[in-house]
Length: 543
Image 1 (cartoon, rainbow, N blue to C red):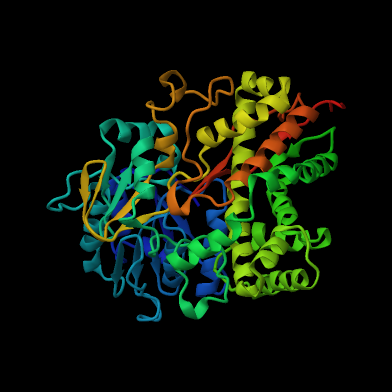
Image 2 (cartoon, rainbow, N blue to C red):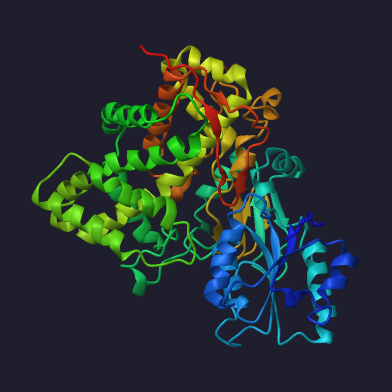
């Protein structure tokens, strides 16, 4: 395969199957030359079935050099896999061209797919102009009366890039994005404007907006569909599950868990080799949040690898599959707490709710906490330590007094890293005024947390373009969101990161990137996370 960046902010043109490059099949070969688009071709997998294409695409997305944004062109059975990918990863797919999908009816996507779709009945010579118009609209945006701003669609790389979002913010707090053929979308920038939008009752987060954040149909209420579990229930049910967790996850109880969290961090560091390169993401940033959540819920230590495999490997792997075994496992823990009360979160929820709280509700609340709590904490740890190592003066501030600095460092890294670039997408249920802009009913609104966290109104301008600054007074951040969908485990996540940073800095003050590391590789999707962080621990400091 070969790849060269495309123009117009659309990423790359990815063709599934060499037949798609024929000039007769939508004229894509010559079109790529005329439009300056560069093409990457994925050859057919063995068997050429839809399931094989799904696996091929999953592997392609996981490679370090796969594009952040792409236009997918597929033919025949590959169309079904492409529709599924566009549904699950709308942040990666700009648009889809489907040529002669097989079967013709079953594989055509249902209304509501987040990106524009062009379906062609077959590879006919006359389809070339249609594809050319389609791709031109993607780059320039169709003429649309009443659209005050025609900004190009933002890629995941844009959403995570403070300099890009500051340019948007400098032009005003609300912007209409060009997204031909999909739900009209607005992005809100600035700290106060973002918080106001996230708390606005006229903007609801209870509607299908992106894959992984859609209401769960009633008939699937007992089925866990992979990573689509953070906001997969209706608004009322979501609020009830949040309340079930929040009333017990108090600051005082979290503080009482700190010695056990330090024990988890020390145990992981004890197992690392001192004399050779270590991937700190795989060996520390990934397993620590999972183990901490298991401590919180009271999962027995021998069972933790099972939940770790589920959260780390199974949840992110397409296609989405029901994970009834995990629900059954959590249900068994809940039944044990009914018989033998324990001072963990499951036990507290069972004891306080009594018969008024059903086992299924406790399971759903635990699942909600597990799925929404693992990845962001891993991202913050990996990206945050990398940022500190890139600014050695900041790492030295932390190692100079870990007990005093780990808390402020956690808040500053939350602001600087911003694990999720945007808050949960909202839908305007009626026309609403957002930061002085009238947004029509049915339109989608995204609050840029990256822009909010780098707003010069709350972050000193001198620090807006540099790395983390652990020495200044804490700046407000919006990394945990705001309003009804604010992170319900924010206090616990802070405790985990604070403990991890303090323990790492105390024991290995000489930690540094491994020799020869010139560039770190990130995957930019809804979460911008490190694929690996190669380090040498250096001499261990023993208190």
